[in-house]
Length: 209
Image 1 (tube, rainbow, N blue to C red):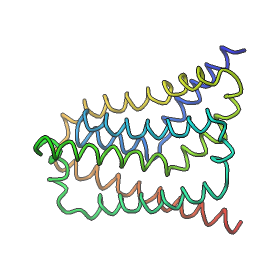
Image 2 (image 1 turned 30 degrees about the vertical axis):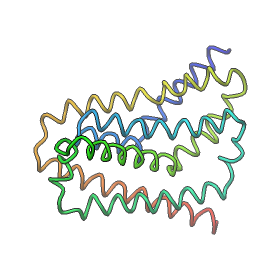
Image 3 (image 1 turned 90 degrees about the horizontal axis):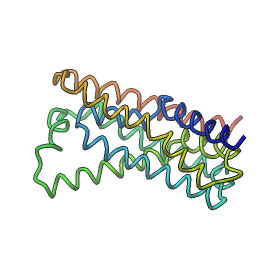
């Protein structure tokens, strides 16, 4: 039964990570447009958010993650942040420079750009209601025993799809043209706008349903 529990956690984590959302979209877009190094930095930001959620579970703070006011606050922050990212991707006329500048900057500025990417990914994950609900409702029942071991299995399960997306995006990047990069940004901008609108709708539904 214990081994079945670990397998169940792995399957749920793997499938949950593959489900389309802002996190994996950001990593895919970064891998396609900026390459493997930047995509891995974005992944580290996402994974750091997982560590925060898992730390809350480990400390027995699942009730905090499940609090409706905490969820509404994170949804609002996430909605505003995703709307801002959508605006940048759809309105930023200097998309050519934005796509390539991370590989052209001096080393000190390059480090700051990667650090900014890390915190962008971390912010998206921490304000992502999908991640919040995933850890607060789906994962909690599996964490009754052997918590440390199960958290490690969950982390590996969540990581594998993201690492696969990084490799796939880096391979496809060699076949993309500058015009394709532009359309990738536009598509991501539209999707981020959709996710933002969905968050505000979810807030309205919680408050007035």
